[in-house]
Length: 310
Ligand code: NAD
Ligand code: UDP
Ligand code: UDP
Image 1: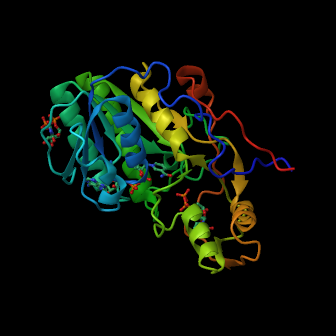
Image 2: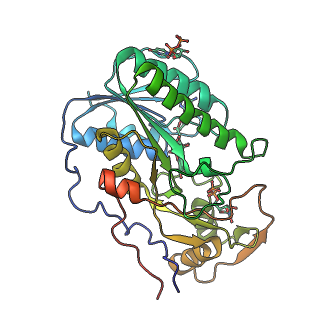
């Protein structure tokens, strides 16, 4: 079969040297909003390892202190409980803006962090999402595609929130000269994912481990592309350190259906795991697969190896 399959934990291109070329600059003061979350906490690990001073701002809406606790006591690490919808005064060189629940605080928080970046002259990176493409009519998705989002649908709060965040980011860049970077992140999995956040990888894995049937929504033929979290973090750091604004798709181009994902979980965890079909959610994108040519060419980032089904 042609569909590349997900390879849990092994399809990383970043298995070798931990500090990539060009990322050795030391002593930066880096703010990571949402740094106690899934992606943020892995990013914090890399930044601390690189020798930066890191301030995590998080309101623990979905994040956990546990995710960053191993840095407590390190003088280069600071954790602030704060909601980014409230203004924040700090002095930093770089801002990785990850804080975001699926709600409009997305926009206000982004505005505040852009205001902060403008005031202190920090470089600002927005973690946007493949959801800006909505239910895409173009496949795979290239950064120049404007997307197909239902502005009044159940998902639109997140999708349109991120689209507005991208707009604000570009306006601060053009209007106020803020140095900005935009990443469009595709589905990501790995350690520290919340087990009960409803995302498909954590759902299937948790269900298989608990000997419950895996809940496949709709006919299971919708596709997604999943990347391992360390690949994403590598891409985010390359983007921040590089000279290009973006937007850049950061994702694994290996595309497969939810039924195939369920099969992989069966093979990996429990060959007897059952599948139970459930009605799909409204406006669920039928297909999603990143074209990562731009990130490969301009950031030198890309998934080295995608295993093919035999
Ligand atoms: P996550 O929920 O684990 O992390 C988000 C963090 O932000 C949490 O620690 C949460 O407590 C914090 N937070 C939320 N609202 C806040 C607020 N108002 N003030 C301060 N902190 C706040 O999610 P994640 O998967 O790590 O995602 C990180 C970023 O990447 C998000 O911006 C998300 O939209 C984006 N993204 C993630 C994926 C993915 O597959 N994981 C895909 C596309 C985009
Ligand atoms: N802001 C912030 N920290 C700063 C600077 C600004 O949180 O260090 C917030 C500020 O409160 C405002 C937003 O960022 O809500 C946008 O700031 P900007 O200066 O661009 O806009 P203005 O305040 O002039 O409307
Ligand atoms: N999905 C599923 N079973 C689940 C959870 C999700 O079949 O238990 C499907 C969902 O309908 C979607 C895909 O998996 O088509 C990815 O869902 P997720 O919420 O993980 O990510 P997103 O839709 O944001 O890409």
